[in-house]
Image (cartoon, rainbow, N blue to C red; front, side, top):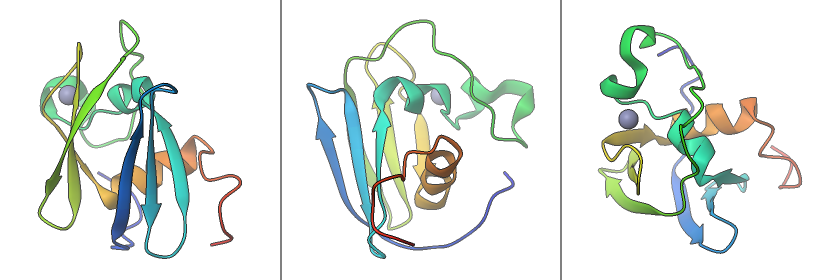
Length: 112
Ligand SMILES: [Zn+2]
């Protein structure tokens, strides 16, 4: 996929279950809050992306995502399983920053 490779480590991934938000904090102080449903829409797995694998495309989920499961993948990515949605997405930290920037999710955090 075509996006900036910053390789800035993620230092915290916190789920806010009531808001259905995943809040991520990077080492440089950037904070982004991702609605679960938005994460599903950007799921980077081959099954979700199909023939548009070379571009970042938002595919609206068929239904709201009410919870997610997280697991670290090495020191470069998060595995995010959307309950009721896709459970095979591996989201690199750079990819998460990129979609957060596209969606304007970094507003209100520290200057970058
Ligand atoms: Zn997927």
